[in-house]
Amino acid sequence: MGDVARRPRSGTGETVRVEHWTNAREQAILAAHNLLDPETAEPYAGVPYVWSDQFGERLQLAGTAHAPDIHFLSGGSGEGSYLALRGDGEKVVGAVGFGCDRRRFNQARRLVTAHTSWDEAVGRDG
Ligand SMILES: Cc1cc2nc3c(=O)[nH]c(=O)nc-3n(C[C@H](O)[C@H](O)[C@H](O)COP(=O)(O)OP(=O)(O)OC[C@H]3O[C@@H](n4cnc5c(N)ncnc54)[C@H](O)[C@@H]3O)c2cc1C
Image: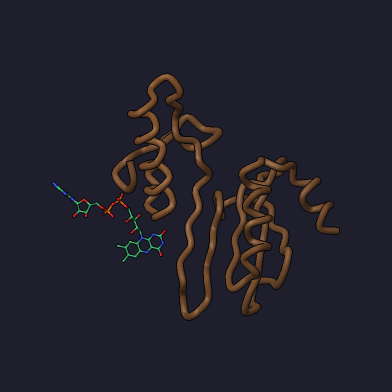
């Protein structure tokens, strides 16, 4: 678990290592649960999430930033702060925020974890 563990990348057959604190923490919690209660053991399927404080602002990423579609919920590229959704043509696959409201980022993160359809998410924003 943690930095040394490879996990399946959702939607593809490949595996990937995710080197972030949240990944290490969530995998450790699940590994302990699986050891203590093997009958309810389950594979790790968390959506990657990372935060880092840079120059006094918080950078946050849930899912992936590498996707063809982008929709800014606030701010924009070149602005001091922003919150953007990334989409793969069908669904929301990522949320990226810098210096944005944390509650709004958590709402966007839930769109990623729920695999919300792109049209629904962007339409909801107006
Ligand atoms: C400079 C830096 C900045 C980072 N910033 C961020 C950030 O902003 N946000 C974020 O999410 N992540 C960040 N990370 C990544 C994050 O630190 C790691 O993803 C996380 O610590 C992984 O946890 P882990 O338990 O898997 O491994 P580790 O934290 O590396 O813990 C492994 C432990 O095992 C010990 N160990 C190794 N070999 C042995 C051995 N043979 N016997 C006994 N013990 C051993 C090591 O000493 C270490 O204590 C950063 C990493 C670095 C290096």
